[in-house]
Length: 305
Image (cartoon, rainbow, N blue to C red; front, side, top):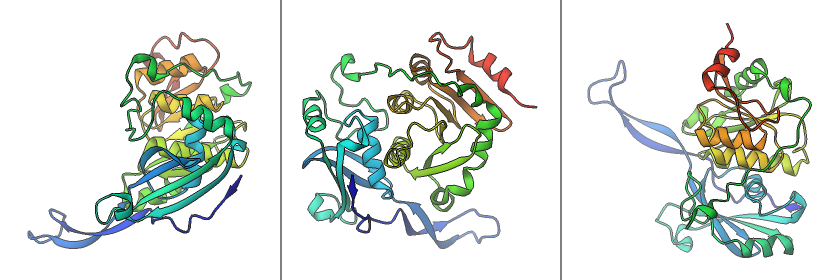
């Protein structure tokens, strides 16, 4: 797969003059300062010349984002199905967007098989929101069938101590969030809890797709390890991981009930509410689909002194 540099992309952060009030030591009339904001840009994903989805994303690591999206949404079977990716900025006027809001187009050249399957899909993901189901016309259109993860003989090594060790290493690498806030992170850690990769985006789904795309480009999706998310654990995040054979995920916030059930059905090990010294094991990834007795039981077992 050939790629072109992202030099034509937009900066991931922006400066904006703001009026600050109520801060200790400030005069009642406040003070004007420059603030750093996270950039949020309309990114069109175009497959073989056909626009398929428009996502609001942080304009960084967009090649990895596009590949990860295509893989985790089942458009491509493997990274080899993508022949090339080209990223270009589109002027706001040309994109039909408000002044000062340029867009970005990511052009993917994909295999004929993948493109034919894409054209046959019943629904478009264009304009898709964070819930991931807007515009679906029926329950069948949700396509919630779980993707079963192959058993891993190392899965029990993803214990609380390992998960918390990896989470502790995340903040220093969340450089965009440190400056602007409002930015999610998706990270990859080894079975020993060593953090090796981290991607950031205003969207949690986008951050995960960027991470999955980066792993796919490096042929590392089959490595033993797990995903960490600086967000809640929803069903679509679980499903994206399971689709690509990732056997474990941990989130800093709580999961949804559907997210837990998707993990149980997929055989994915799922940690949530991972805030040291505590964590909750919602699905153990050991093969049963019935799940743990209750979240409170898992929480009591997982808590550290």
